[in-house]
Image (cartoon, rainbow, N blue to C red; front, side, top):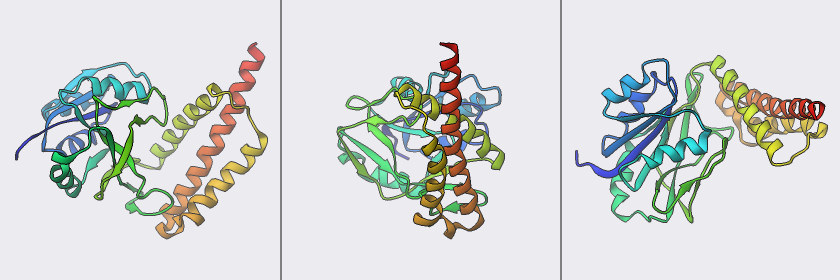
Length: 254
């Protein structure tokens, strides 16, 4: 296969179950960079065996970590994937076909299809779930957000074929992830100067469930759709509860 001057860039921590699939999903790139946050499993070994150049870097938050990873790439064009993501063969073919005419000032959005609880999830806001994953690092940069990081680009163009995502390994993994992300979300709201609101604590979780399960038709995904909507609602509840806890503790300490 002819290689294209594109760098596949991945950040990882204990991703031995996913990293090889992620790397092998882009056989047309001529450079693979993995930035590992000192994994204790076989992530580094597997990544190197799959042809990646591996860098060890202490965790800095999503935005800074991905910016560091992009800076290690040999090429200007970057495909940035999380370790639990992979290009579908159709998306790979689409990138190859369009590469010669890519706009260096644009960021390219991939529709993301996620697998959870034994099925591909098609509703509840989970699909198409566009993610900006292809960009030119000479023209665009990751922002410094610790959560909900994004690439700053002048314009966005959507690809048609999906990127695949194995979002959680299990329900327990979902609970752990929601706990971690709700902490980051609470800290982000606090840093932005937002004040805790009992009204939002009570209403945001309910409105999130209604949004994902009814408005965005999560019920069409059966029991997994119901579980996902409850989880999304609980994650929002945790975010505001942790915001209350954070501001209460800091108020006492001051």
